[in-house]
Image 1: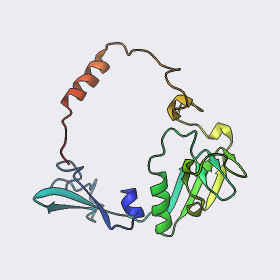
Image 2 (image 1 turned 30 degrees about the horizontal axis):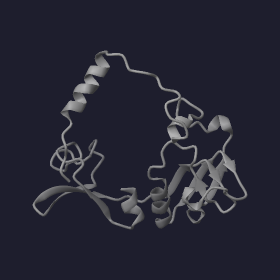
Image 3 (image 1 turned 60 degrees about the horizontal axis):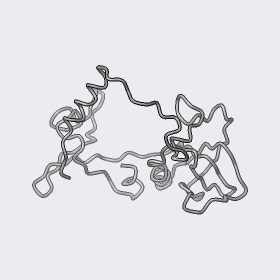
Image 4 (image 1 turned 90 degrees about the vertical axis):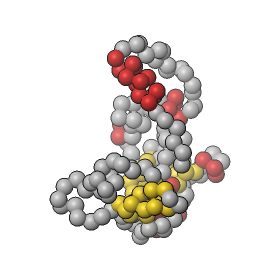
Length: 181
């Protein structure tokens, strides 16, 4: 959805959500009577059903990176996942909003190759350098290089013991079906 918003599309077409609470034939993602606007439409394209999710304006992006240079270019070498950071920044800028990025450090010039820049400075309005104690990599850890692929297996927790949770997880995986898109 963020990539479609960044591209200026009016909405996102997807089969995700069919026959669930977001399907307009059921609840249409309306959680209570205060929700009156239809945000999801059921469409038939080439004889297949799909949902069209209407986009909403994004005015502010609060993103996270590792290093910012003096031009606002953001790299994410200590981030576990980059996900949609670039698309979110693009969508917000295309809507006239502001992009704020929290980083752990500044540099005069990136010594990494340009392909390591995940958000170009042209999309960044403000860089916030956080104190190390406010820049946790996850809710639980300050930094774990295994999450970024810098190391592999050094902090392995070994095999998970066979218990009820493992049996349920295995059974759930067996129920997954290959979906034709």
